[in-house]
Length: 169
Image (cartoon, rainbow, N blue to C red):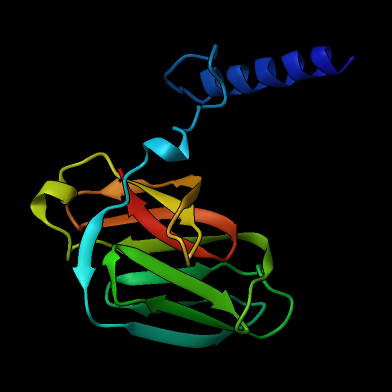
C-alpha cells in the first residue's frame, strides 16, 4: 500500500508541475541533491565578524547586516523572540542564525538572503547553492538550494529551522 501511495504522490506532484507550467522531468521527482562529499564550500575570507539581532514577534520582521538578512513572515513565531544573525570571521562565506541563543522550529518558513559580494569573481560565476553546515567542522549536512541573483551577488533560500549556513558549489 505504501508503494501505491508513493507512486500516487509522485504522480500528483508531476501533474501539479505540468499544470503550473513547470519544466523538467517527472521521472526524477523530487530533484536529487549532490552528496555532501562532492560539495565545495565557497572560500571568501574575512577577518571581521559582523552581527545583528532583533526582537521579532507574531507580526514578523527582518534582521539584516551587510546585505545579508533573515525575514520572518507574519505568524512564523507565536511570541517575541530574539533573532541573532552573525557573519563570522571565516575563510568561507558562512552565516549563523540563532533564536534566543539557540535554535527554534518556525511555524512558517522564513527567508534568508546571503550577500556574497566579498567573494572573488571566480566564485561569483559558479553555480551556487546554500548548505546547512556543522558550524564547528564546516561539514556540509543538507542542501538548502537557493535562488542566486548574479546581479546583486545574493542568494536567497527558505527554511523552517535555524542553523549555520554556507555558500557552496
